[in-house]
Length: 252
Image 1 (spheres, rainbow, N blue to C red):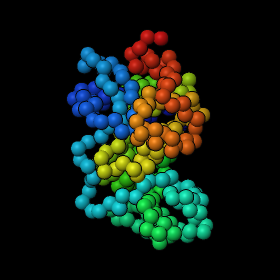
Image 2: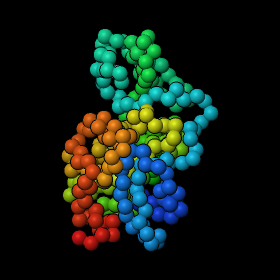
Image 3: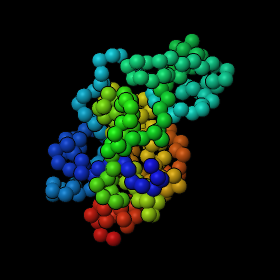
């Protein structure tokens, strides 16, 4: 996909009953954006919330390891130098993924000794058919319904969304706004939010990136303080261009 082309979700999905039900969930990472939804006659808070009531998907045990970019990484999630701590790998049929494991973390019985490498740049558009077999874990981009509108990228496991990120992008003015992140119960603390932010930023390299308002909760501050994004990211002050405002139904 060419850089600058908005490919991250359908704003239509934010109207109607699904949006109203989602707005009832408690904020976890604290991105908030209030926008008038056509047909509802009122503003709906856009917050990080649960995606569904499904919980964990699948019947086989999921080890619950965090997701991480393929790297190469010089340190494990607990900060050990991998050239000294030693690194191993094993295969997990339940997710059709190989893990990467720090041997020293395993010996010390530390939390998060392993992680699942997942390429955040390998995002399939929802309208592009799967060529061979559908991955058990995949990132899927849902394009906006209009240029410079709001789209989203979802992390799907067994074809069910367990997390997603709403993104608004303008390929003309090279701007991007992260509007909200949602993660299902049972999938938090697995670096999925970080993975989704990386996936969004990768869609617009050299864009001017910003986010909507971030609340002052401990969870929100901990999440954003832990990020090391590849692109500069202005937090809490959305920088919409005129094309985005038009797509949002606002005057310019």
